[in-house]
Amino acid sequence: MVGIGDILPALLGGVIFQKGSLKRFHNLVVNNGPLRDQRGIALVMVMWALVLLAVFAAELALSARSDRSTVRNFKEDRQAYFIAKAGVEMAFNEILADFDFTYVADGQLVLAKNGEENAEYAPRNGILIGGGALSYTIRDENGKLNLNALARDGARLQTVFGLLFPEGLEGVDAAVDSIQDWVDADDLHRANGAESDFYQTRQNPHKARNADFDSLDELRKVNGVTPEMFARLSPIVSLYPGGALNVNTAPETVLLAQGLPADQVAVIMKVREEKGYSDATGQSDIFEITSSGSFEGSPLVHTIRVYVRKTGPRSLRVLDWIDSYYPVKKEEIQEEKKKG
Figure 1 (cartoon, rainbow, N blue to C red):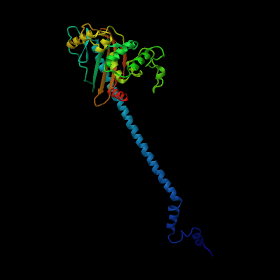
Figure 2 (figure 1 turned 90 degrees about the horizontal axis):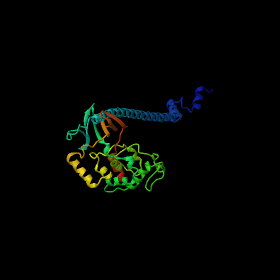
Figure 3 (figure 1 turned 120 degrees about the vertical axis):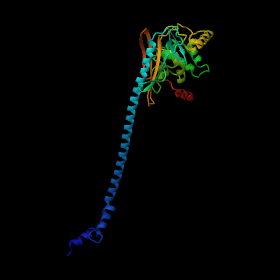
Figure 4 (figure 1 turned 180 degrees about the vertical axis):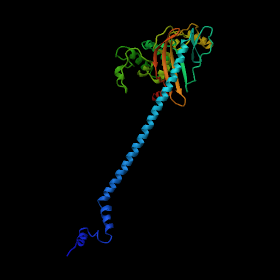
């Protein structure tokens, strides 16, 4: 008679009830069977899960670091802004003071009273305040050329560029024609100029204004106006029509562009060099203030530019307030020269 002990070994290949049967069964089912494949797949999935967790943790840490940096930069910029704003207030106080005429000494605008021509002006650089430092400048807009009037006079514009670049500069014709096209009312471009159809093809499309310049920075948008051209032209032009040209503060380029004879300009510059000013009645009523502030330990510098008109003995009217002003950097000019 055949018993169960005879049947099972036959059915299972003798792997259970013979000597060493348990070990052989494990090798057959686990090490060499389907469970081995499942164990390998599980190991791969665990490894991928660990990789994904590591990537997620790294991204989370990077995002947190970036957020902290953004918050810190914002805080430091706000601190620098209010320090720069304090510089603007200091400039306001100087302009509101009683003065008879203005002139330039050591690159600084002096607001002087008759009989006090050699008085020292208030320090404007490296002023320590509120855990930071500020510097500001005051410039006379009455010693500049009116940009919008200049932009409509091609011959005079050519003269100004010739005075600014006595060594010559390629591309002046394109800049001169494009500046005129920018302010004229039509859409017909001059020989070397550009109108809206050209500007619409740029990476950041825009239209020609076909009206007066609204800001000096608009010059940067005009075809042909390079960073170097802007850096030399912008300090001698103004958007604000003032009174008579102040010969005490006008640069030599401006005096010549105004049509004054070269010999007369030479006399004015010589007198200014000797005593600082040429005319003790040279009045100014519009001023440009540029103030920069920085907070101790921070590399950030915030610059504000403000244009004001003195409307009375103790009153000012703000013509324009630029909260964040970015002057042309030397690197931009050098990069433009490399491209040229």
